[in-house]
Amino acid sequence: MHKRILVILGHPAKNSFCNALADSYITGAKVGGNEVKLISLANLSFDPVLHEGYATIQELEPDLVAAQAAITWAQHIVFVYPIWWGAIPALLKGFIDRVFLPGFAFKFKEGSAFWDSLLSGRSAHLLVTMDTPPWYFRWVFRMPGHNQMKRTILEFCGIKPVRISSFGSIKGSSLQKREKWLAEVNKQGRNA
Image (cartoon, rainbow, N blue to C red; front, side):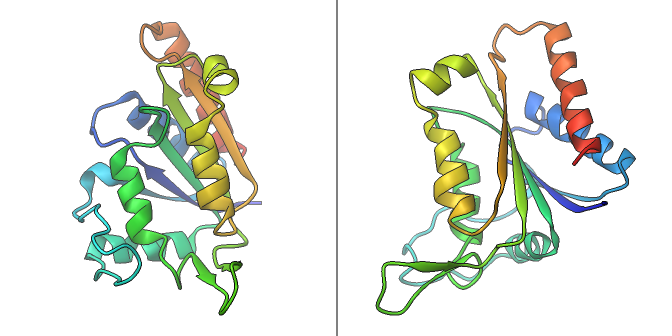
């Protein structure tokens, strides 16, 4: 079954291994017959700071309005980003703060601590790079960045299942290793 896939590239640099991973995934997904859109956060123009929290919703810049439309369109969302300080980069967090708004991504129930998840019916795949060896990130640090994205953001908004592929340690990795990771991601795209 062919899908509508949105790839969100969350690395703030325009020339990173995350860019290569996103390109490889997109190539594979298109070969697999899927329709693919890309949002590269490094190319967007928006204020990533949620100045008033959710007490006052800031007017969305045109790039963020387009991002919400792309998320609504998508059946499967692929996030590609590095782990920095155990979590997602500030630019990606700011994008989520500004785009995954009450009324769009979730809605708290009146007089209740519970909420409605408004992005149900979508799945996600996280392609995550790190300098920490993935086993160390899992067993010693307990995967704070993975838990943040999977549980407290995406599943909170109804996006599931959420699959995670970790690539590391990037620092000092060989060209052969990186080519193997790119081939793996290309195959994941074909089989999306």
